[in-house]
Every structure is written in structure tokens, then in C-alpha cells.
Image 1: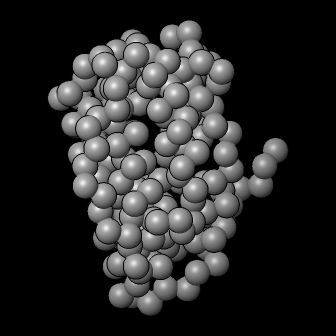
Image 2: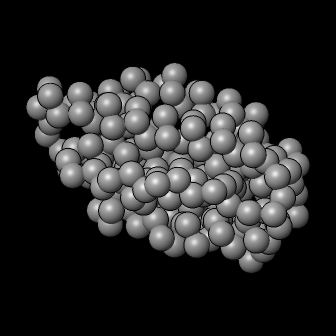
Length: 187
């Protein structure tokens, strides 16, 4: 059994203050992956979110290139095209703000475990169509992030920055999934 990471006051603040934003993103997934079409929509939205996050984090913290590559392999396996790219946002220069983004990106690995089971029920696997979910679900990025977060000591202004950045990341995820839902077409 893996040891549970400590619940820090920063983690509690983020969980509490981003709950509504998190719920909006979850609602866009419509309760899960009931069909290949719905799964394709999820992959397209996640691909867009990872692209934006990769630009914002610019090599700091979580490594997203592998995740993006796996998403592109999964999209190809399902004959879906990625959402048209957007202009890359500038890298986030602030260390605390990057932690806010990492909270959202790393936390997605928790949901990936649940979604992987649904993708497997649709016939996809780590070898075909569910490479991203299998990799993300098996990555210990979330507990490692929580340990890092618990070690930090934030000023009140930094806590505001942390929260605002996490909310920005959830807004980017929400936008990505809305776009995927609106443009849910095969390539």
C-alpha cells in the first residue's frame, strides 16, 4: 500500500477554492466515457489542455511531452484529429503560479485511473487507444506533487497566486473540453 501524502493547508485551500471549477470540468465529461465518440471528445479536449499546460509550464515541474505524444497516438488509433492548435500562451514566469497549474495537471492522474477502466470497457488498452490514460494513471505524479506542495511555505499573497493559477488552469481545461465537444468530428 502506498503511503498517503500529507494534506497541507495549501492543498486544502486549493481543493476548497477550485471545487466549483473542478466540478464544471467533470460535468463536461458527462459522467464518463460511454462511447468511442465520447472518448474521442475527451482525448481531443485533454490534448488541447496538455498543449496549453505544456506552454505555460515550459519545462518546469511535470513533463508533458510524453503525455502529448501518447494523446496523439490515441487520437490516431480512434481516427480523430486533434483540435486545431491555438497560439501558445507565454510561459508562466512565477514559480508559485506554476505550482497552481501543476495542481490541476498532476491531479488529472487521479481521474485517469477511473477513465482508464471505462476506456478498457470500450476495448482500448495501453497498447492501443488508451496509452495516455494508462501512462497517466500509473504515474505517481500526484502524490509526488502533494509532497512538494506540503514542503512549501507560502505567504498570503503567494496563496492567492497559487489559487488564481489553479483556477486559470481549470478554466483552460474547461475551455479545451468545451471546444472538443463543439468540434467533435472525426479526422
